[in-house]
Length: 192
Image (cartoon, rainbow, N blue to C red; front, side, top):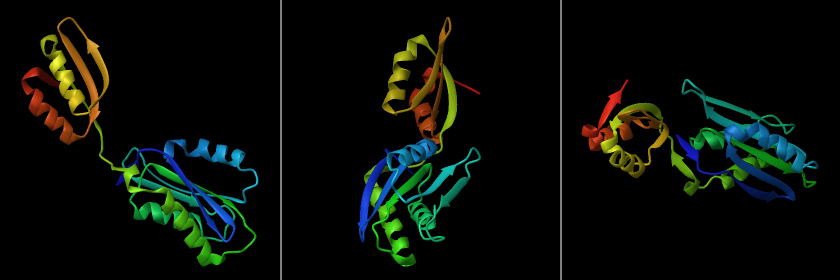
């Protein structure tokens, strides 16, 4: 499964109709949809599709055709997201009607092509499940431990200091945790 690094938009013109697709983070979906409706008051349709992981690591999907003929816009958009194996994202396509009907096949192609245009490989990265870990270290080892965390790009959530130790809570993949332990083993005490 893949995530996006940043939001992106692109425009496709087909027989004078404009399809403006916005690839966004799912967490921004509702706010983005409201903003786009205010920004494009003369647009005819606001088609969307989304995919995200819920707390049980299950993929939740949804789409709407927003007045386009059934399954000619939202479903093809969702199919692109499924085909690219994207998660925690949404695509909202704003359509301005250009006066020429595209037919069902033309709509499917236009919405699929518009969605595909917004997705480029450099903007994708592999999803890895993050877990929370904790350990404590003596002040003697603090700078070395922080150096290893930074080198491994491990995100520290919190640090707590007492009289003799610093306790770290952080998120990373299980693989990164094992690698960190191997380079810091004598300097840390793992907490459960």
